[in-house]
Image 1 (cartoon, rainbow, N blue to C red):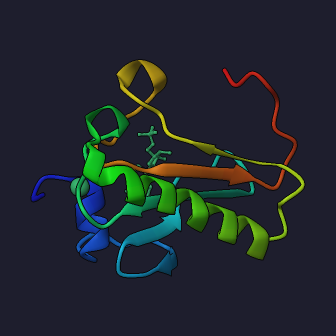
Image 2 (cartoon, rainbow, N blue to C red):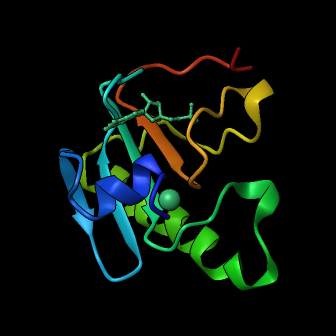
Length: 113
Ligand code: 5GP
Ligand code: ZN
């Protein structure tokens, strides 16, 4: 999508600190990290958000979580990390291209705010 920030990051039109990439996903460091590890896992195909996801998107939604688990293992943060989809403006979703947050590397409190 032309006017989507994360589509522009995938296309390299906006710079980012890449963590991992394959044919299905792009992973990069969050620009305002909320934990020592704070990366965003995004599908290369534009999906607006979780509530707009369709049956066809089920595989990529699951795949994003497996990629998050691999990164957490590589970074040695398996003692405790969190994967988060913010869904809708009331949750803090500010970019409307599906993105999975992976947060870890510090103690994470529960419930989140
Ligand atoms: P949301 O609030 O929509 O769940 O998450 C959007 C995330 O994208 C935020 O954590 C924000 O810091 C991050 N973000 C917004 N703009 C940019 C950008 O231009 N580059 C990077 N690397 N992260 C961004
Ligand atoms: Zn997009």
